[in-house]
Amino acid sequence: MIWAHHLGKQVLPAYADKFSRHDFTLPQLFACLVLREHQRKSYRAVEALLRDCPAWCADIGMTGVPDHNTLWRAFGVVARLGKMNRMLDLQAKWAKKCGMVQSPAKPVALDSTLFESRHVSRHFEKRCRETAGRAKRKKGRKHLKKQGDRRRSRTLKGLPKLSLAVASLSHLILAARPSTGGGPDYAHLAPLLTATLRRARVRKVVADAGFDSEPNHVTARQDLGVRSIMPAGTGRPGKDGKPPAGPWRRRMRRLLATKRGRRRSGYTQRWQAETVNSMVKRNLGSALRARTARRRSMELMLRCVTHNLMIFRGARRTVETEQLRPRLFSRLFSRLFSSPFVLLVCSPSCVPVCSPDLAPSISEAHARTRPARPARRQGKARGLHHHCACFCPHSYSALRIGPSVRPFSVRKYSARGGCSS
Image (cartoon, rainbow, N blue to C red):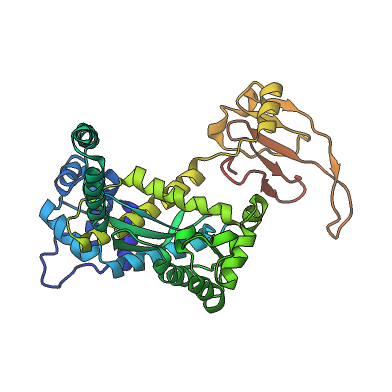
């Protein structure tokens, strides 16, 4: 909620109207809506959750809990497509600062997926199949096939659809385009690629055969300057192995014909978009709670923003808690040293610097000698510099402390964690 509140303060105004009651700010209500998507709850359920967790409300400056009607009305104001796109713009800026977007070996992947318009019981689906199986034995199969096709066509026309542009390096959603109903994906490539180029630098884009068309290749390569990799799989196959129409589609046929060509062109990174679809559906749910097509589109965009916030939070948590544990050093420390703190000293004049909470006292440490090495030429006379190192097996990091004849220079061997000085 803190991350969502911070994002909302940079995009949303404090209040929707100057004549409103000003009980809650729009960033606070946006944080509550993100919590609702994260916990996969209804408006009434998230209201009860916030009442049980007053500390969460205090973290974002709320003195009370918003009513479920307030949250429903705030959803129509906060989750508009323009505001969600501005939030994606800001998240892309965060990602570029963290190095989570640009990579020559990781292209942008495009894909689309369908969501369920409402929650469907799996038991109900099973009973429907059993009923259809019993009816199949009584009636003709041809009549049942036509009835099933009509029902499937009616269902697909009302399903929400989400097309995504994903950064393969970090699974971050760079652009999203919600729509309703099934159909080909080639009409979504130009809007997705245009929005992605506005937020990040793109050199290559990979997509499945649903986005394949000769105008899409021309738009991506000649108009936008992006190398497009899409298999030429749309349309009816030509007779007698006839190549597809268009120079770019024929080039794709030759490029993606072998496994080596698909790997060298980067097309194998397209599966990262499938991973993002799975992440969104498993973590945030595959069924939508809204009832109209407009609010379903708004809910899909809110899920994209929530997915990116979860990635940012997980990346920071990994950086904060992950420790560098090389197997070589772990085996070396486990064999040589048995105490939780080891001090390597080569000269009595060297003063070890280490955090006091890592070892009870210096006297409990084991002292060993380390041979001196010739120092590098630094504009003065050469000599032997004595060094000492503090090793902490719990974080497998080391600090090298310079000689006592000049100020101490501490160099960290590990980029994460370790002893402090």
